[in-house]
Image (cartoon, rainbow, N blue to C red; front, top):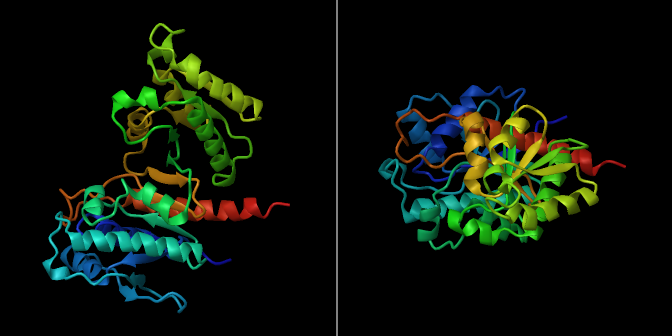
Length: 336
Protein backbone atom coordinates (compact mmCIF):
# COMPACT_ATOMS: atom_id res chain seq x y z
CA UNK A 1 0.00 0.00 0.00
CA UNK A 2 1.52 3.34 -1.09
CA UNK A 3 2.24 6.12 1.38
CA UNK A 4 -0.19 9.03 1.38
CA UNK A 5 0.93 12.01 -0.71
CA UNK A 6 0.43 15.21 1.25
CA UNK A 7 0.85 18.54 -0.49
CA UNK A 8 2.51 21.15 1.71
CA UNK A 9 1.75 24.71 0.67
CA UNK A 10 4.75 26.93 1.46
CA UNK A 11 2.73 29.76 3.00
CA UNK A 12 4.25 33.22 2.96
CA UNK A 13 7.70 32.98 1.33
CA UNK A 14 9.01 35.68 3.70
CA UNK A 15 7.83 33.84 6.82
CA UNK A 16 9.00 30.66 8.52
CA UNK A 17 7.21 28.37 6.03
CA UNK A 18 10.36 27.57 4.00
CA UNK A 19 12.37 26.79 7.14
CA UNK A 20 9.82 24.51 8.79
CA UNK A 21 9.35 22.63 5.50
CA UNK A 22 13.08 21.91 5.35
CA UNK A 23 13.24 20.99 9.03
CA UNK A 24 10.25 18.70 8.61
CA UNK A 25 12.03 16.94 5.75
CA UNK A 26 15.11 16.42 7.91
CA UNK A 27 13.23 15.02 10.90
CA UNK A 28 11.03 12.46 9.09
CA UNK A 29 11.75 8.99 7.73
CA UNK A 30 10.66 8.79 4.09
CA UNK A 31 10.03 5.05 4.41
CA UNK A 32 7.44 5.40 7.14
CA UNK A 33 6.11 8.96 6.83
CA UNK A 34 3.63 10.43 4.34
CA UNK A 35 5.22 11.52 1.07
CA UNK A 36 5.49 15.33 1.03
CA UNK A 37 5.11 17.37 -2.14
CA UNK A 38 5.89 21.05 -1.75
CA UNK A 39 3.80 23.66 -3.54
CA UNK A 40 6.02 26.69 -3.51
CA UNK A 41 9.21 28.30 -4.73
CA UNK A 42 12.33 26.22 -5.35
CA UNK A 43 14.65 29.24 -5.29
CA UNK A 44 13.38 30.47 -1.93
CA UNK A 45 13.69 27.00 -0.42
CA UNK A 46 17.22 26.63 -1.80
CA UNK A 47 18.27 29.99 -0.36
CA UNK A 48 16.79 29.09 3.02
CA UNK A 49 18.56 25.73 3.01
CA UNK A 50 21.90 27.34 2.14
CA UNK A 51 21.67 30.15 4.70
CA UNK A 52 20.63 27.87 7.55
CA UNK A 53 22.89 24.94 6.56
CA UNK A 54 19.94 22.58 6.21
CA UNK A 55 21.10 19.68 4.07
CA UNK A 56 17.94 18.91 2.12
CA UNK A 57 18.08 17.85 -1.52
CA UNK A 58 15.41 19.62 -3.58
CA UNK A 59 14.02 18.50 -6.92
CA UNK A 60 11.51 20.19 -9.24
CA UNK A 61 8.52 17.93 -9.87
CA UNK A 62 5.66 17.94 -12.34
CA UNK A 63 2.42 16.15 -11.41
CA UNK A 64 2.03 12.99 -13.43
CA UNK A 65 5.76 12.21 -13.49
CA UNK A 66 7.56 9.81 -11.11
CA UNK A 67 8.39 11.24 -7.72
CA UNK A 68 12.13 11.80 -7.17
CA UNK A 69 14.05 9.42 -4.95
CA UNK A 70 16.15 10.95 -2.18
CA UNK A 71 14.99 14.50 -2.79
CA UNK A 72 12.12 16.71 -1.71
CA UNK A 73 9.75 17.20 -4.67
CA UNK A 74 8.80 20.82 -5.31
CA UNK A 75 6.06 21.99 -7.67
CA UNK A 76 7.45 25.33 -8.84
CA UNK A 77 4.52 27.70 -8.69
CA UNK A 78 6.54 30.91 -8.36
CA UNK A 79 10.02 32.09 -9.19
CA UNK A 80 10.53 35.02 -6.89
CA UNK A 81 13.88 36.85 -6.88
CA UNK A 82 15.10 34.76 -3.95
CA UNK A 83 18.31 36.71 -3.39
CA UNK A 84 16.33 39.93 -2.95
CA UNK A 85 13.76 38.44 -0.60
CA UNK A 86 13.82 40.00 2.86
CA UNK A 87 12.90 37.54 5.58
CA UNK A 88 10.04 38.89 7.65
CA UNK A 89 8.95 41.43 5.04
CA UNK A 90 6.05 40.32 2.83
CA UNK A 91 5.35 42.05 -0.47
CA UNK A 92 2.57 42.02 -3.01
CA UNK A 93 4.63 39.50 -5.02
CA UNK A 94 5.09 37.14 -2.08
CA UNK A 95 1.41 37.44 -1.18
CA UNK A 96 0.29 36.68 -4.74
CA UNK A 97 2.57 33.64 -4.80
CA UNK A 98 1.27 32.55 -1.39
CA UNK A 99 -2.31 32.56 -2.69
CA UNK A 100 -1.28 30.63 -5.78
CA UNK A 101 0.13 27.80 -3.70
CA UNK A 102 -3.22 27.38 -1.97
CA UNK A 103 -5.21 27.51 -5.21
CA UNK A 104 -3.04 24.83 -6.82
CA UNK A 105 -3.11 22.68 -3.70
CA UNK A 106 -6.90 22.64 -3.81
CA UNK A 107 -6.91 21.85 -7.54
CA UNK A 108 -4.45 18.96 -7.25
CA UNK A 109 -6.19 17.48 -4.22
CA UNK A 110 -9.60 17.58 -5.88
CA UNK A 111 -8.02 15.99 -8.97
CA UNK A 112 -6.77 13.08 -6.84
CA UNK A 113 -3.08 13.81 -7.42
CA UNK A 114 -2.63 14.70 -3.76
CA UNK A 115 -4.39 12.87 -0.94
CA UNK A 116 -4.50 15.93 1.32
CA UNK A 117 -2.94 19.32 1.92
CA UNK A 118 -1.13 20.66 4.96
CA UNK A 119 -0.73 24.41 4.88
CA UNK A 120 2.10 26.56 6.19
CA UNK A 121 1.12 29.94 7.66
CA UNK A 122 0.01 32.90 5.58
CA UNK A 123 -0.31 36.60 6.30
CA UNK A 124 -3.95 37.66 6.27
CA UNK A 125 -2.95 41.32 5.87
CA UNK A 126 -0.67 40.53 2.93
CA UNK A 127 -3.37 38.37 1.34
CA UNK A 128 -5.81 41.26 1.38
CA UNK A 129 -3.15 43.76 0.25
CA UNK A 130 -2.67 41.58 -2.82
CA UNK A 131 -6.36 41.94 -3.70
CA UNK A 132 -7.83 38.83 -2.10
CA UNK A 133 -10.88 39.58 0.05
CA UNK A 134 -10.69 36.46 2.22
CA UNK A 135 -10.17 37.00 5.96
CA UNK A 136 -7.90 33.95 6.03
CA UNK A 137 -7.06 30.44 4.91
CA UNK A 138 -10.33 28.85 5.98
CA UNK A 139 -12.56 31.30 4.12
CA UNK A 140 -10.39 31.04 1.01
CA UNK A 141 -10.57 27.25 1.02
CA UNK A 142 -14.34 27.38 1.50
CA UNK A 143 -14.68 29.69 -1.51
CA UNK A 144 -12.34 27.65 -3.72
CA UNK A 145 -14.29 24.46 -2.99
CA UNK A 146 -17.76 26.02 -2.99
CA UNK A 147 -18.36 24.89 0.60
CA UNK A 148 -21.13 26.82 2.37
CA UNK A 149 -20.37 25.68 5.92
CA UNK A 150 -16.93 25.10 7.42
CA UNK A 151 -15.63 25.01 10.96
CA UNK A 152 -12.28 25.06 12.75
CA UNK A 153 -11.02 22.23 14.92
CA UNK A 154 -7.76 22.36 16.85
CA UNK A 155 -6.52 18.83 17.40
CA UNK A 156 -3.83 17.35 19.59
CA UNK A 157 -3.14 14.06 21.32
CA UNK A 158 -4.77 15.23 24.58
CA UNK A 159 -7.38 17.75 23.52
CA UNK A 160 -9.59 18.68 20.56
CA UNK A 161 -11.66 21.84 20.45
CA UNK A 162 -14.09 23.32 17.92
CA UNK A 163 -15.27 26.93 17.85
CA UNK A 164 -18.76 28.34 17.32
CA UNK A 165 -17.41 31.86 16.74
CA UNK A 166 -13.87 32.51 15.59
CA UNK A 167 -12.40 35.87 14.59
CA UNK A 168 -14.60 38.55 16.08
CA UNK A 169 -14.40 40.97 19.00
CA UNK A 170 -15.24 39.37 22.32
CA UNK A 171 -18.07 41.84 22.84
CA UNK A 172 -19.82 40.53 19.72
CA UNK A 173 -19.80 36.87 20.77
CA UNK A 174 -23.14 36.75 22.66
CA UNK A 175 -25.01 38.32 19.75
CA UNK A 176 -23.47 35.87 17.30
CA UNK A 177 -24.43 32.78 19.28
CA UNK A 178 -27.59 31.02 18.16
CA UNK A 179 -29.05 27.62 18.95
CA UNK A 180 -28.77 26.74 15.26
CA UNK A 181 -25.06 27.64 15.18
CA UNK A 182 -24.25 25.62 18.28
CA UNK A 183 -26.25 22.63 17.02
CA UNK A 184 -24.58 22.82 13.61
CA UNK A 185 -21.14 22.70 15.21
CA UNK A 186 -22.05 19.81 17.51
CA UNK A 187 -23.15 17.85 14.44
CA UNK A 188 -20.03 18.78 12.45
CA UNK A 189 -17.80 17.86 15.39
CA UNK A 190 -19.48 14.48 15.78
CA UNK A 191 -19.25 13.82 12.05
CA UNK A 192 -15.54 14.63 11.98
CA UNK A 193 -14.75 12.53 15.05
CA UNK A 194 -16.44 9.54 13.43
CA UNK A 195 -15.16 9.93 9.86
CA UNK A 196 -11.80 11.68 10.30
CA UNK A 197 -10.68 10.29 13.65
CA UNK A 198 -12.28 6.82 13.44
CA UNK A 199 -14.21 7.17 16.71
CA UNK A 200 -17.49 5.25 16.27
CA UNK A 201 -19.17 6.67 19.40
CA UNK A 202 -17.49 10.00 20.13
CA UNK A 203 -18.17 11.82 23.38
CA UNK A 204 -18.61 15.58 23.09
CA UNK A 205 -18.67 18.22 25.81
CA UNK A 206 -20.10 21.70 25.28
CA UNK A 207 -18.67 24.67 27.16
CA UNK A 208 -20.88 27.38 28.55
CA UNK A 209 -20.34 31.01 27.67
CA UNK A 210 -20.44 32.58 31.12
CA UNK A 211 -18.60 31.90 34.39
CA UNK A 212 -20.02 28.84 36.13
CA UNK A 213 -22.04 28.23 32.93
CA UNK A 214 -24.31 31.08 33.98
CA UNK A 215 -25.03 29.80 37.52
CA UNK A 216 -28.72 29.25 36.71
CA UNK A 217 -29.02 32.64 35.07
CA UNK A 218 -27.21 34.61 37.77
CA UNK A 219 -24.26 35.39 35.47
CA UNK A 220 -26.05 35.26 32.13
CA UNK A 221 -28.82 33.32 30.43
CA UNK A 222 -27.19 32.21 27.16
CA UNK A 223 -26.68 28.70 28.56
CA UNK A 224 -30.40 28.23 29.15
CA UNK A 225 -31.79 30.08 26.16
CA UNK A 226 -29.26 29.20 23.44
CA UNK A 227 -26.80 26.44 24.31
CA UNK A 228 -28.93 23.97 26.28
CA UNK A 229 -31.62 23.70 23.55
CA UNK A 230 -28.89 22.82 21.04
CA UNK A 231 -27.48 20.13 23.33
CA UNK A 232 -30.95 18.68 23.90
CA UNK A 233 -31.69 18.52 20.19
CA UNK A 234 -28.33 16.90 19.46
CA UNK A 235 -29.04 14.26 22.10
CA UNK A 236 -32.41 13.56 20.44
CA UNK A 237 -30.42 13.06 17.22
CA UNK A 238 -28.44 10.29 18.95
CA UNK A 239 -25.24 12.29 19.55
CA UNK A 240 -23.38 11.59 22.80
CA UNK A 241 -23.09 15.18 24.00
CA UNK A 242 -23.25 16.79 27.43
CA UNK A 243 -23.26 20.33 28.77
CA UNK A 244 -23.11 23.20 28.87
CA UNK A 245 -20.33 22.85 31.42
CA UNK A 246 -18.51 25.61 33.33
CA UNK A 247 -15.58 26.59 31.10
CA UNK A 248 -13.12 26.42 33.99
CA UNK A 249 -13.58 22.65 34.41
CA UNK A 250 -14.61 21.20 31.06
CA UNK A 251 -11.15 21.27 29.45
CA UNK A 252 -9.60 19.38 32.35
CA UNK A 253 -12.28 16.71 31.94
CA UNK A 254 -11.61 16.42 28.20
CA UNK A 255 -7.83 16.36 28.60
CA UNK A 256 -8.28 13.61 31.20
CA UNK A 257 -10.01 11.43 28.60
CA UNK A 258 -13.67 11.84 29.53
CA UNK A 259 -14.53 13.57 26.23
CA UNK A 260 -13.18 13.40 22.70
CA UNK A 261 -13.77 17.08 21.90
CA UNK A 262 -15.07 20.29 23.45
CA UNK A 263 -17.40 22.61 21.54
CA UNK A 264 -16.40 26.15 22.53
CA UNK A 265 -18.31 29.38 22.23
CA UNK A 266 -15.46 31.68 21.17
CA UNK A 267 -11.89 31.68 19.92
CA UNK A 268 -9.79 32.15 23.04
CA UNK A 269 -12.07 30.02 25.19
CA UNK A 270 -10.83 27.02 23.22
CA UNK A 271 -7.39 28.21 22.10
CA UNK A 272 -5.98 29.13 25.51
CA UNK A 273 -6.32 25.64 27.07
CA UNK A 274 -5.46 24.01 23.77
CA UNK A 275 -2.20 25.90 23.32
CA UNK A 276 -1.30 25.36 26.95
CA UNK A 277 -1.21 21.63 26.13
CA UNK A 278 -0.26 21.71 22.46
CA UNK A 279 1.74 24.87 21.85
CA UNK A 280 4.29 23.11 19.62
CA UNK A 281 2.36 20.21 18.14
CA UNK A 282 -1.21 21.46 17.71
CA UNK A 283 -2.95 21.07 14.36
CA UNK A 284 -5.70 23.14 12.77
CA UNK A 285 -8.23 20.99 10.87
CA UNK A 286 -10.88 22.52 8.62
CA UNK A 287 -14.19 20.67 8.96
CA UNK A 288 -16.77 20.58 6.19
CA UNK A 289 -14.46 20.74 3.15
CA UNK A 290 -14.67 18.11 0.38
CA UNK A 291 -10.93 17.58 0.79
CA UNK A 292 -8.58 16.98 3.70
CA UNK A 293 -6.86 20.13 4.93
CA UNK A 294 -4.76 20.51 8.03
CA UNK A 295 -2.54 23.39 9.01
CA UNK A 296 0.10 24.41 11.47
CA UNK A 297 -1.31 26.06 14.56
CA UNK A 298 0.86 29.17 14.40
CA UNK A 299 1.47 32.23 12.28
CA UNK A 300 4.15 33.41 9.88
CA UNK A 301 6.45 34.42 12.78
CA UNK A 302 8.06 37.20 10.77
CA UNK A 303 10.10 38.19 13.83
CA UNK A 304 12.13 34.97 13.65
CA UNK A 305 12.00 34.26 9.90
CA UNK A 306 15.42 33.44 8.51
CA UNK A 307 17.04 33.16 11.93
CA UNK A 308 17.15 29.37 12.07
CA UNK A 309 15.12 28.94 15.26
CA UNK A 310 11.70 27.92 13.90
CA UNK A 311 10.12 24.70 15.23
CA UNK A 312 8.67 22.26 12.68
CA UNK A 313 6.75 20.17 15.22
CA UNK A 314 3.34 21.56 14.27
CA UNK A 315 3.98 21.01 10.57
CA UNK A 316 5.06 17.42 11.17
CA UNK A 317 1.93 16.83 13.23
CA UNK A 318 -0.21 18.47 10.52
CA UNK A 319 1.25 16.28 7.76
CA UNK A 320 0.85 13.10 9.80
CA UNK A 321 -2.73 13.98 10.76
CA UNK A 322 -3.62 14.87 7.17
CA UNK A 323 -2.49 11.44 6.05
CA UNK A 324 -4.33 9.73 8.91
CA UNK A 325 -7.57 11.60 8.17
CA UNK A 326 -7.29 10.75 4.47
CA UNK A 327 -6.92 7.06 5.29
CA UNK A 328 -9.73 7.16 7.86
CA UNK A 329 -12.10 8.82 5.39
CA UNK A 330 -11.33 6.22 2.75
CA UNK A 331 -12.10 3.38 5.15
CA UNK A 332 -15.24 5.13 6.46
CA UNK A 333 -16.58 5.82 2.97
CA UNK A 334 -15.93 2.24 1.85
CA UNK A 335 -17.95 0.67 4.65
CA UNK A 336 -20.82 -1.50 3.47
